[in-house]
Length: 198
Ligand code: VGL
Ligand code: ZN
Image 1 (cartoon, protein in one colour):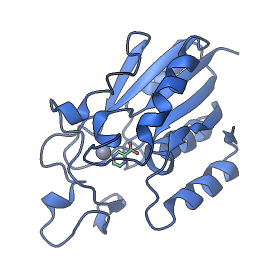
Image 2 (tube, helix red, strand yellow):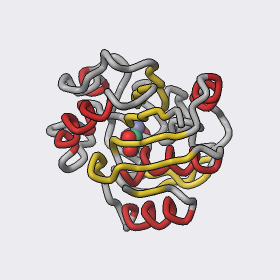
Image 3 (cartoon, helix red, strand yellow):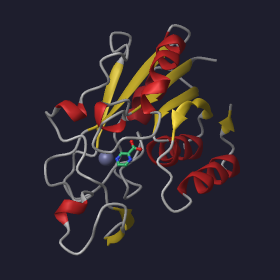
């Protein structure tokens, strides 16, 4: 089966000393690089927000980071400013092998909608185009790794499973944020959706 390695958001802001650092985020990079040679296709995703993005707590006078707010499309966790377009924090970790990437999917660039998933924005209907890319390349199996397990990895894996891809998440090559039980909820959700957790 033709398989793609989907590397989620291995960017400076999600790693050591980053604006939204995920504990141990930098530890996965060498293992992720090692998986690339075995994949038929390599996709990197890049969280890519305009300054003042609606998912930033700093854009809401009444809320702080990690608090929930209501958006027209549903509940949204508010984050510290991160992965702002053109900043060093939005760059991939320097030690990530970007040369092997066939395509880089950017997401979160619409000011008023966040996008955790590599497939759809958080309104769950605006596509990024990744589904079409994978299907036209004849790819049916996805191995997903990256940051963060409970947000962008989880949402990407859930959408991929709903779209009918055969999905494996390699847990040792992911790290979580874990706000308000989000890690356990993500694990339960992915298992329920038929995602293989390896
Ligand atoms: C992510 C929160 C906000 C992620 C991105 O990559 O998991 N989390 N933006
Ligand atoms: Zn983001």
